[in-house]
Image (spheres, protein in one colour):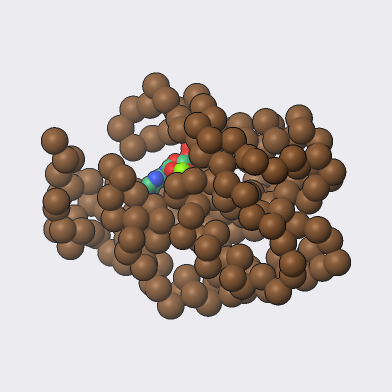
Length: 185
Ligand code: IMP
Ligand code: MG
């Protein structure tokens, strides 16, 4: 397995920057949903680390559920927008306040697909929170309600975000130099 140090360009967001920003988001979300019954929906697997940290910064009582999607028919390191549900929610979201938690908004296809799907189940409200937003990459109009960091058009990894399913465990977000990266066999 290739060491990330062999292909990292730069640390895009440090562990400390993440910690501070996640605490701010937790505070803001807690204020916005004060007195409400909130269901946090973590999009697996990229949103896992973020959701785990974010929910521990919420001072309001809430529930957590998870959903897993995959996009198919995709090229290298880009989402095609053909999204399939691998694992659906256990919770019935009808009449609930739902907050989707995702790692990255890139073309916007994944989130807009999930938002459309979940809205058919008639939640009371439906919002999204992304750790990273690559706004200049947007191909469909999708605006996240909460954004951790706006980042440039760059392939990133760490803090839940993978390259070929690896490097999710890193506690910072790195930018990858894909010319130096060797794809596993
Ligand atoms: P979208 O559907 O194009 O917005 O893509 C969103 C999904 O693509 C995210 O949930 C990630 O799984 C993946 N993705 C987008 N950019 C990156 C990246 O830089 N590194 C790793 N995964 C990414
Ligand atoms: Mg993802």
